[in-house]
Length: 209
Image 1 (cartoon, one colour):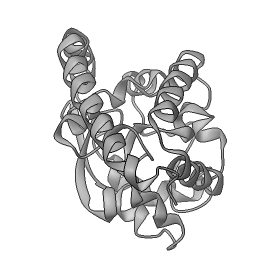
Image 2 (cartoon, one colour):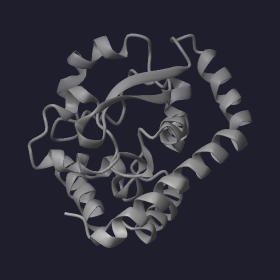
Image 3 (cartoon, helix red, strand yellow):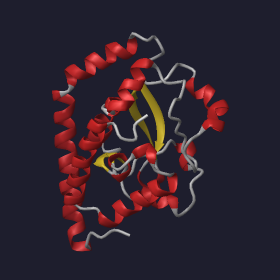
Image 4 (cartoon, one colour):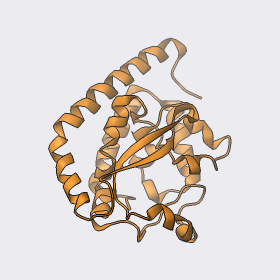
């Protein structure tokens, strides 16, 4: 599946993990004032805790707790079932363009991807990488086929081809193919290219909701 040669795999993983630690730690320090501003904005809506925690499927299908800034109302999970009929994405994942559960502050955070910043802590811990397939909630990952679960052969990431190339404008099958493509092509160059593409996608707001 991976294009990284066996004799280069260790070097690639070492460089990738070192980069993850350095940039996630640096990001947490440099962006700490922004974290405070976002936290105050989220708290002002009185919809629960500032940080949202959710069990996600990680590397080799091992669950871990992923962190995000809260973007939804308190009872979002309870409302999920009745919202299922409005799902705009095929497959097990749920996406809805005008999801009424999203708060005003949450909509801005999602459009700018600022809600994902706490995942720098996940990267620092080693649960995630800066670049890798986006981790699905465990209850969605459980519905994936064996072929789709191949996306878990590498550590999940904050961004990936899907984040950089359309996000919610692509089908679930296309999303999976992008993840499998990443596994085939993974390299430092690929990671850098995806990070640069992600910056462009975030600035344009393409596919974000």
